[in-house]
Length: 177
Image 1 (cartoon, helix red, strand yellow):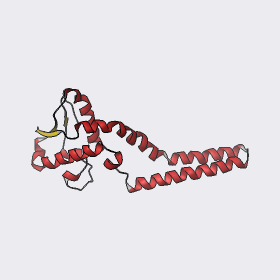
Image 2 (tube, one colour; image 1 turned 90 degrees about the horizontal axis):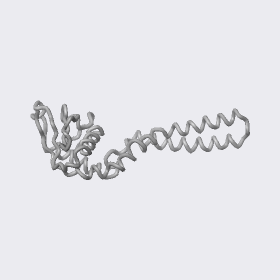
Image 3 (cartoon, one colour; image 1 turned 135 degrees about the vertical axis):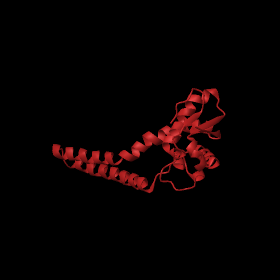
Image 4 (spheres, helix red, strand yellow; image 1 turned 90 degrees about the vertical axis):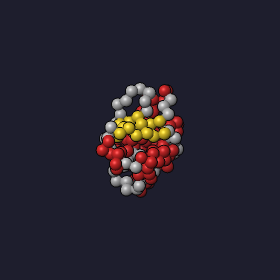
């Protein structure tokens, strides 16, 4: 998205729509930025923050000017960055299917611990011990997606919140190319 000189806080977009989730039908001002846009903004900020930029420049094709509500885009960026400086659950809450999968994963994990422990106590038979370990492995696999979200999204967000707060209220300008 970007190929700028150091110290310049800017990103280049092929379309304003690149900032948002493709299936979000809310008005632009109410739509949060997608993960890729937030990450690109964070990376661009990291490269430029030492020079103290006073504004963010969005480089957008001239053909987008007629269909872009600049103020709505500014509002969306400001509200998303404000949310990004808080807990991840406010910015990117779990979907219903993710919440259900996490609950099933935890329940499965605890159930497999109980079954595995019961099998281990039944006998020293190597087959039963192998079965016990296989059942326990199933429980760990059930936690894979919730654990992946924790490690790849929640924990990095905790460290990035302060950076988002640094530029949450930055002025946004448009450069129509």
